[in-house]
Length: 146
Image 1: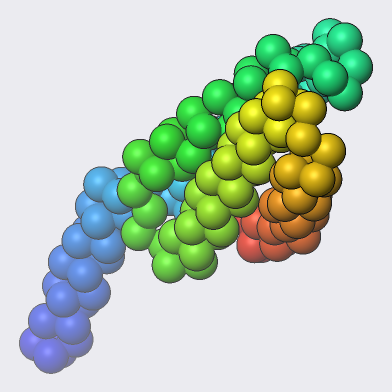
Image 2: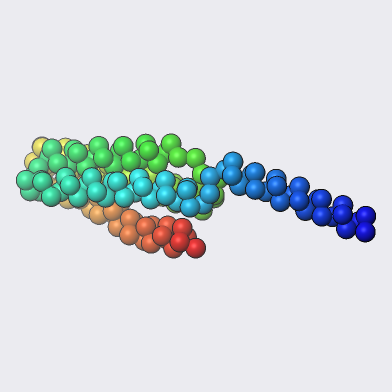
């Protein structure tokens, strides 16, 4: 009987420590929400800019998009995740936002200087960067909903 009581006490202590550790660290859901909040904010901001843009030559709109994605990269970099999968997703978002911002800035430069070849290269780079978004979002949604 004494052994059983010791075991029960050990389980109780482990249970209490587990609850304390869980409450002190952010949950997977909380961490997912932080990542998703930034990603959704970028989509909303970019959609707003593109809806009010005056066409493909609107360099001010392109600059806003470049700034929005650069800001998102900075916000994404500031997140601290314990979850390794979320860290990997975070790294992919940072890379995508960085590439999007750089390509958009290159488009602004090319359009401003009327360099069609540079504009095409920047557009191709922008497409490459933004094509990564949909699969990444699907992966995050799948992981975070499990």
